[in-house]
Image (cartoon, rainbow, N blue to C red; front, side):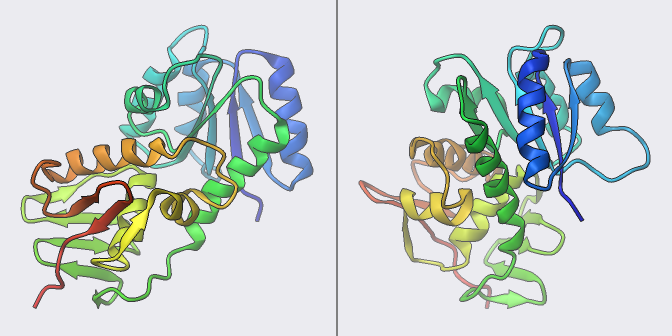
Length: 238
């Protein structure tokens, strides 16, 4: 069954071009031009859910980042931000409150299709090796990662992560103690055809630590290896 993509852009010409490329690659495509229509489309009763949202930041009614906040309050759908602005990557994604990827205008439609495929491949990476398990859960001291339900529980209770943050934590937790470079995490989590800045990893690590209550100055879950990358610090529950 074809994956569904929602294109959100107030320029009809851009929507038409992206739709043509995505449909030629086998995707089912919906398109809207405003933030309000985006929220209505995502909450429409019945029908199959949207898999990926291509969300332009410069919408005529609601700001794209405001729309993303509303999406994140109710959904883990993959969201790729589209922007014509020139902000630093970490500022853009930090403000975005849960974007999975970003792309800047002008862009190649083929690159957009590649980004969509990259985020969807994350769903195919559910098989994790080398980690302590209890059924479909990875069980550590003070932390449980339920792979099937995509739920996180700490000693303080349930934790909500974005879809990408969950995948990033899962990649690290699959090999406790192993040091992952930023390039390895981009390959494992974002996909081989990720074209962005490696700093995007740092931004999502910061968001994940904040959600987990993990102090960057004295981390108990995700450790920083200076000049290299990150590693998972938790030990298996005894």
